[in-house]
Length: 237
Image (spheres, rainbow, N blue to C red):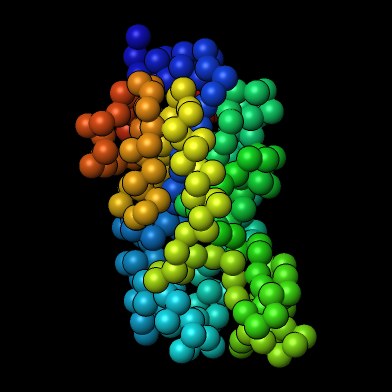
């Protein structure tokens, strides 16, 4: 049995699958990742992306933060791809229990997934840092400079910036789902961003599948490693 057939058999026979994905899930929707050859970390700005996307930079230079954020982080024309729609279908069929994602684009929900743990937040949720009033992404798109609440406070994206902690409820929910999974599928992530990458160690089963275009340091721990496109793999499921 080849690797793809093995993967398909695991999916077919399980009703307790969890998918854990990173930027590579959304690159096939046209959203650039951070660390590939063409990713944001290899483009040139006045400041490195990891500096701009930090809590301290947001507090000290909100105007420059939003100039970058609007330009590079709001990919609102992107649509769900084959992987997103396949995962939503598997959930609807009662096979997939949860999606754990490092992405902030909301494409899993757009495809129809319901139980999604967004470890790094979402561009579609924003709130006033002063009074807590909620705003959709339109408040960011339709404003100039630093978006302001009706109370005068600064509106902040509900995304986890560098120097910030993950939401504990989201993190604990993701850990619980992974720990209980029969099949854990990890795809489109280099597994280098902590603490998210450390979640894989909570898996207790023996059907850990890694799907990436390039090797990762976690490959030696996997029960099945497939090098290739997520879309090509999930088109077969």
